Image 1: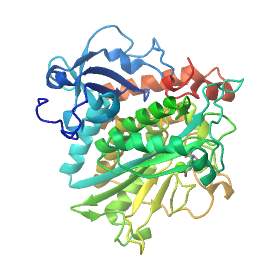
Image 2: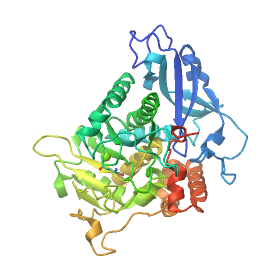
Image 3: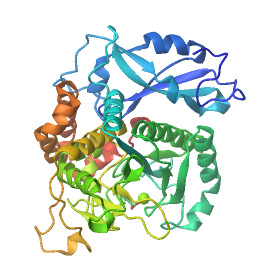
Image 4: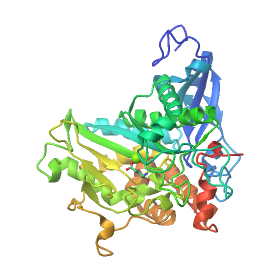
Length: 452
Ligand code: GLU
Ligand code: MG
C-alpha cells in the first residue's frame, strides 16, 4: 500500500495522519507499541519492526520473572501491522493506529503471537460455517491524579450509581470521551455512569473476534488519553479498591450458521438451537480454564464476589445477572439473542480470550456435554454446594487451564506453556501480599495509568 491511496479506514480528507502506532497485547494483557512514520507502512508490513520475545515475559507490574521460559535475551521477532485494520487513533495530533502480529525473521508466523492465534481460530470457525459476533463492555474508574493517602484511587467525578447527576457533573469529560472514540473510528452502543463511585462504562459495537479485540485495545488507549487531558487517571483494574465494586469487561456474543442465529428460534430452553446449547454447555464446562484468560490477574478474583454482578458461579441463566453466562433471549422487540460472559475483566488479553472462545465454539460442534437447567434466582441464596463456585483465585484457574487439553492443543504448546509461566509469575508476585496490598499493587492497571 502506498500513501497515494488512503489506507483502509482512512479517508482522503485525513491527510494529516503522520505517525503509526502499532500495538500488540502481551501475555500480561498490556498493550505494547512501536511507532513508525506512516510513510513507512509498506516497509513495516513487509519486514516488520523488531520486538524481543522477552516482552511476553513482562509481568503485570512490568517486571520479568526469571523463572519464565521467555526470560532470555536471545532472538528477535518482527511486529507487522495489519494494514486492513488501520484506523485513526488521535487524528488531530496526526496519529494512526494498527494492530500488529509478530513473525519470525524466516517469515513464519510466531506460534506465541496472541492476535495470530485469534485470527487462526476466526478462520477455522468460518471454515466450519459459523459466524461469531462479539463485543465488549468496558468499565473504568475515573480518579484524581493524587491518590488517597493509602495509595488507592480517589474518585474524580461525583454523582450516584447510573446517575444522570454524574453524567452532568462530568459532561465535558463524557463529551470528550465520545468525541475521541468517534474520531478513532470506534462504533459504540452505549455509555453511562456505572454503579461504583466515579465509574463509567462504554459498550463497543459488535464485530468479528478480531474487530472486537482491536476495538477494545484502541478504546482503552483513547479513554486513557482523554482522562489524562483532564488531569485525571483511569483505572481499568478489576478491583481498584477493596471497598468499591470492581471493573468488569463483559463479553457479549452471538453465533449464526449461514445467517441463521443459533441462540434463538430453536426448541431448547429459552429458544436455543441444538448447536446453541452445545456451545453454551461447552463454554460453561470450560469456564474454570477460560478464566485464566478472562480473569488473569491475581486481583481479578477479588472482584468476583457474589452479589456484585460479576457472577462467580458456574451456571447459566436467562437474564440472570448472577450467572456467569447470561442468555439474553430474543423477544417481541426483535433484538437478536446473545450470551454475556460476565467473568471477564480488562486485564484479559482480548485476542487470547476470543481465540479461546472460538476454539471452544468449534469444539462444541464435535462433542459437547449436556446443558444443565438454567439457574433462576440468586445462587448465593441457595444452600452451599448447590451451585458450583468458579475458581476463587488465579492458582485454581491456572490449574484448570493447565489441565484443559482442548485449550492446550488449540493454542499450541508454545503459547499455552508461556501463559502458564505468566500465570505462575502473577501468582508469585502476589502471594506474600494481603488482600489490601494486592489491590493496591494492581489498582493502576494498566501500569502507565497510574502515578509514577
Ligand atoms: N461492575 C460489575 C462487574 O464487576 C458489572 C456491572 C454490570 O452488570 O455492568 O462485573
Ligand atoms: Mg456494567
